[in-house]
Length: 143
Image (cartoon, rainbow, N blue to C red; front, top):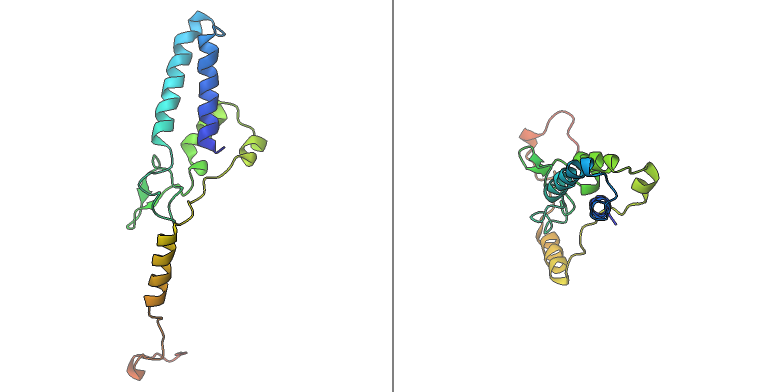
């Protein structure tokens, strides 16, 4: 179970307690609104489905967005998402529980993807410095 799933279970439990009348009516509406707000945050801060095809960013948080010229994810793993960590804190997560949670992992590549990766590696020409003309070599040149 990852952090997103753990928080979802906590919200489910609070909603169950509301349905069973465990909260005084004066608190009921506020608790329901908080659960709805938590679910909205959970819907935004999840593993990015568009990045799931990329082995490099397959566990990135969609809600945290991207940065830089290459649009790298702000949060590489959804378990490191600051928003989710704040929600987890509000739901009483302990350091031991957090340490015991699974971290989302990139999916194993399919045989076809593995084959394409091997082909790309075979077609890549290694870059060598031995072909640089002497006129372009600096005083500390090392081939």
